[in-house]
Structure formats: C-alpha cells, structure tokens
Image (tube, rainbow, N blue to C red; front, side):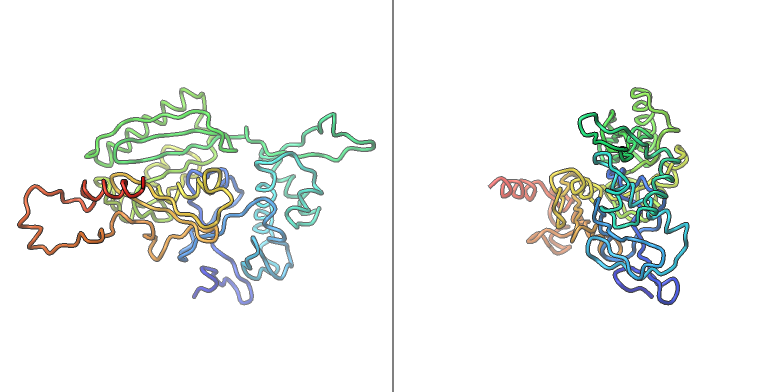
Length: 355
C-alpha cells in the first residue's frame, strides 16, 4: 500500500518517497549521484532548491523535511544511500551559486560539517566539485577558509525535442548554458524509424559542430508528445505516426553511454520555465504548448502534476465546448475538418487571447 502521496513503506517505521527521474530540459537538476523511479502519485516530487533541504537526511534522524514538507521517517537507513542523498543535497547547493565554504554549505543544508566534508570529498573525486582560491579583495587575516565550487565544465548535457514537423537538439554545460543547437525538418507523416533517424543525424551534426564528445555527456533528456512511461515508452501518442507503444527510451539509449530520460514535452516545458524561465519563483504554474496536438504541463505547489495515469495535460484530446455533434450530423456533412481543433475554433481562441 501507499501513503503520503506516493511514499512506500519499505520496513515498519521507515518511509521513503519515490522520486521522479524524468525531468527533461532541466537536466542540471539530474546531475545527481543517484536516481530512482518516477512517482506514481498524482503529484510528482517537489523540486528542491539550494538551502531548502535543511536536515534532509541524516543517519539516525527521526524525520525528513523538504521545503517545509514532511517526507517521512528515515531512521538508520542504508549508509550508502544516505551518503548519496547528502552528496546530492550538497551538489544542489553549490550548483548555480558562488563558491562556498564548508561552514556555509552546512548552514544552508542543515547537515553537519563532517557530513558536508565527506560529501564534498565524494563530489571532488567524481570531478563535480573543486577547491578554488578566494578573491584577493575578500581575503582576511589568518588562515583562509577553503572555498568549493561546482564544475559546470565537468561534462555536458544533451536535450532533444521531437515534434510533428521537426526534431531539434541542444547541448549545454552542466549549468545549462547553451553551447550550440541544431534542428531538421521532418514530414508530419514520417514514421517512427524515419523520425528517430533524423534525430540521430541532428545529434551527430551538433556534436561535430560544437566539438563535444559523446563520452563527455552526463545525461540526455528527450521531450516527446504523448503519455510517457518511466522507462521512456510512449504509452499513448496520437500526434505522431507509429508513436503509441514505441520504446523510445530503449531505442535512444543504444546511442549513448549515459542516462537517457524521456518526458512529455509539455511537462518538460513547465519544468524548464519553473527552473529558469518565466515561472521562476512561482510554484503554481500552467504551461500550454499550442500546435498540431496541444498539450499542457502544470506544477501545483512546486510539484509536477501528472494526474492518474499521467494524462493530466493531454488537453488536445478534450472535446471543445459546443462542438459535440451526433454521428449522424458528422456523417452527413461534407468538406469539414475531422480534427477537433478546426480552423474556426483556433481563430476564435487566439482572437480571445489577444483581447
């Protein structure tokens, strides 16, 4: 059984919350030392922010809190799991900010200084953190405290977008700073094999142009229309031919040696806007993608809202108000578009939006 919106009891008195492992186009958040299955609850995990995970996990700690929300009791626990989680918290604190001392990181995370020091050592061994010198103007008398920074140059991230009319790829450093992009047009009627092949060609062109090697890729994120399972299988995808049932994640993983994470494109857009776009600082967000098959991604309380079965944002499948007609009427009408978003409805929607 489950409790607390997806928390699964592993042992009596110990609770763990499953985490989402498919946050596409917000890949820097996925540069973690651990990953776990996508939550099956209607609400996804709350996105952590630096300084928000005070006292997230400590051995012997009787409770865990993330951004003010109790995430369950974690007493004792697997030391290796605790160490990896602590490393992820420290990494998230160092990423995207100025160099910090061990004392500053301990204060921001709520972890003890020895725990922080151990996490920093692990991250340094992985090449993700490095000690750096203080600026000359900030030095004080006495022995200077050691400063540590996140190494955004330690690898690269690849974001892929698959749509009805084009495929696109973008490569960035580990902070998400874009280094280059490429795109190719594709026929709307193209099958899955043709679409994936054009995506492969686009990736090859981009990597050659930017000089980024495949071995330096830390993660690949893919945005695709449709309802996407945790393993990257498209459970339902009506916008693209031959897309329903496609094992997209499995097919793309053959080309890379790093994790490949597949997410619904609208959900990925919502996460991206929340991370560093128009929705920064807002925890209740709706992002709508308008196109051949409209979709929506939403965050409620800072968490990705999937709905039961993961179809919460599939607004393209909804009936338009006032457009329902009997089969007899539809069969007796000639020259009328069959797509539920007919041209008149689209024109009216955008006219109302402009007003």
